[in-house]
Image 1: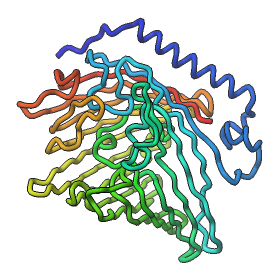
Image 2: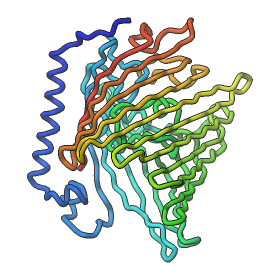
Image 3: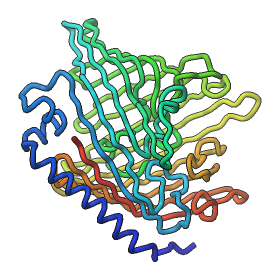
Image 4: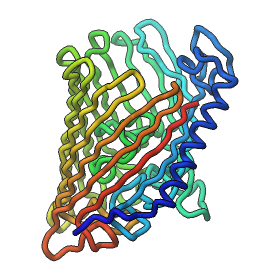
Length: 405
């Protein structure tokens, strides 16, 4: 297959101008009324609401706007195959308009403390983060793929026993994996297949967590209502969710997490995730991730999926860094990569290579251009996952802008 290099320059220029104009107009507007110290420390919204203070406000109010555009040089389809989040080809996406209310809780041996967090999200990413029986029915949108989600809503307390134990209950993001839903906390605009198809996004339940040795080790364990689910009509049992994070050397952290319980017509689903983060030098960070999961099938063969991701991120300057992600995801039985909105996927091995840049010209503005190449090795009888099932590879050029406030 020959990758198409003649995609529309007019569309490219128009969208790029829109993203850049919006980004720098908002940056100029914010910087005109918020002091630099507030921008760096408290955030724009908290500073505007509570003013500048040496002490953190009782409740932190913050948010971000993530918007971008993806050029698909391979496909004539309006979707980027099984790539999700930035799944639309040749189309502007407001991925996340998020508002967060949070009061953090400190681990203490002496006193009780109460906090929590609520996340509100609107945009094209919201549909991927909803939980069954909760925010999947809160709103419906007639404007294409835009909807609203509440991916987190939990209370958290410090229990003054054993030198302090934290407990949170409600709706929260998963422990599993490396990449996360919240756009400012990822290096790349697009996501790895492991995160998109191999892991849960959110849970309902309760978790205990305990840190040891000044935070060098943290243990988390609890019970949750499965994967992305509140109203479980087929599986009545809770799942175990737990993890351990350990600083095993200077600049080296190993995190292991596991979830196991009935998921899918009363059959067990179990998975683990291992994430090793190592600072190779002052400027170079390496992350290695491995996931493995098995779904029991009543009256049939078990389904399995697994993968390995490698990340390298190099800091060129305080406001500029570059990174590479190399990934392999195996869907043995075609039960995970289902294409979601595009409808194309299927069993086989998925490979991805992404190069990207993070440029932060202002403390509250980050630009993330990237180039991503995807390839699938499929069984001979199956269709490709890209270009409406016609291709086994694709090349994407994408960019987003994140405004934190």
